[in-house]
Length: 331
Image (tube, rainbow, N blue to C red):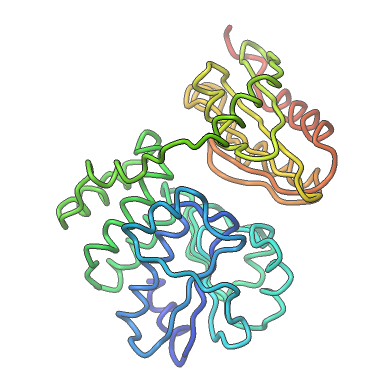
């Protein structure tokens, strides 16, 4: 069991840093919180700090009302004995910490439900990764089970919230996720109350960003599938989700900010099931390489970070999609 390897790495560690990707979403921050409680149960004398590159997402900040996550910024890299990367399969997701982490010479544990990038695997002492699960929180739950450690009510709630977020309220959850959810509900988590916590009121700036993105929407058609492209400096993921609701099959929304390029990709479940095109693996990954950055994600939700010209990136993305969508699909 991997929990034994984890225990070996924890042995003698006085400070463990739990690191989440930039703009950490609920799956990242909730899995970090639960992992911190697990480590405290396994090694009560070990100090644990949680940090998120470039802070938390708006929704994650909202969840701090119920999940008492306290962030350390900046992390005490110089004092750390062990680093744990959560929901972070590539160092590119660490922003300015990308160059720091591999130079520390400290043991690194990766916990993620995405396939780790080869560069990340090369520096990791232990990879707890499984693409067969729906969220990192589900992996952390498995660790509690393997360690025979009981979850606190707050940790159970955190894992439920992270799983619900990453599966779109369980719309794209796999069977293993429902088994975990059933056990979390038996522990006292209220699904109704928890799901209501994930309902974040949309502020004016996000509404304006969505409208601007819609005004700039460019529609293209590939073998019957509608693909929408748009540019907006912020709220790219929100705009992409909105485009799916409007009716496009694939939404690609990008923006340039402080010389950095960020692109959010979303597709309908129908598109994935009928074409087999996995946005994270088949589109975001090669697109990330094209923009001298990194890309990855889920089957219907992915992201790309890099640099360069957004128009060129969109053209490259469209070429990738054209090559991936089978010409044998019936109209």
